[in-house]
Image 1 (cartoon, rainbow, N blue to C red):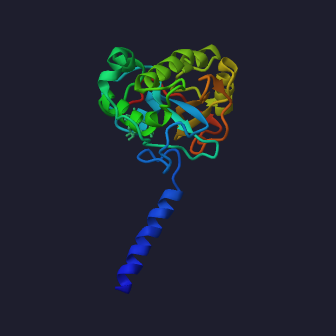
Image 2 (cartoon, rainbow, N blue to C red):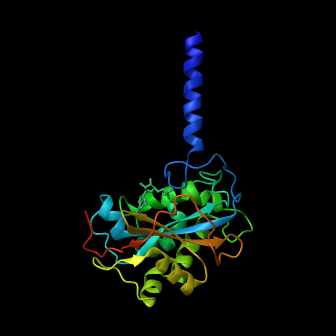
Length: 236
Ligand code: 5GP
């Protein structure tokens, strides 16, 4: 009996310590906060296909030499974040008028696009939806993502600052973030895999949906020194 109690306590301790080490990049779960609207700002996350797909197997025929949307994530300044909040579940029918645009700008590199939208909405979107706020339902959530994407075209912003996708050239990661800041007026955060730029996230004010400087964000400090933005030849 004593052994059983010790076993149960050990399992509980392991579960608690795994949860306390969770970062923004543990993609399966979130914090225990499931109250919609209970967060400080949004991270608007865009991914660079040819970095992601040079490290992980991607679906074929998803070619686009552009940053595309990963998600719009409620986040807290202390780096916790709400996830899987209460509220209506994802309904593809609610966003049927947006599907053509989503199939270009918010594509999954690894699965069917609608599965990606479902998981992004379940995990992050449900926490954004608050009556009377700029995002008051599922449709608003996806409209907000598409609108932010149109307003912040990272690919052309970088090109305007002479930063191009290339298999030869590398750029100081600070010069990439400065270029984004000078184009849009907000300091971004970034993620790299093996010195390849894979993600740029902009910080977005939750009330006005306008850009702001990012604070430090857990897991988004993985670019340093010279990094590349691989071209379309980089696919597994
Ligand atoms: P998140 O990072 O948004 O919390 O969770 C991402 C989830 O979406 C993961 O389970 C990942 O496997 C899945 N996923 C589907 N398509 C993509 C994609 O194109 N990029 C990334 N990063 N994750 C994707």
